[in-house]
Image (cartoon, rainbow, N blue to C red; front, side, top):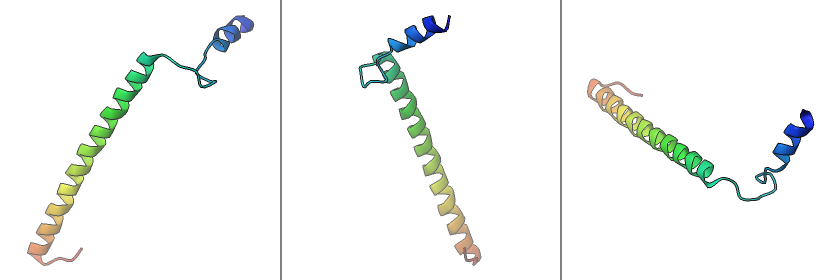
Length: 64
């Protein structure tokens, strides 16, 4: 049984720099782009909060 499983994985050409399934790369690429877009939106929201807190603290006379 182990030899059969080993033979199936030995046909995989991704380990030696070979091609690979373009569908897998497309899925991973879209997942990465989605994650980067979410991080970008979270960062812009955080930057906005920092600006608002800084503005309010200046109005109230606090130093950060």
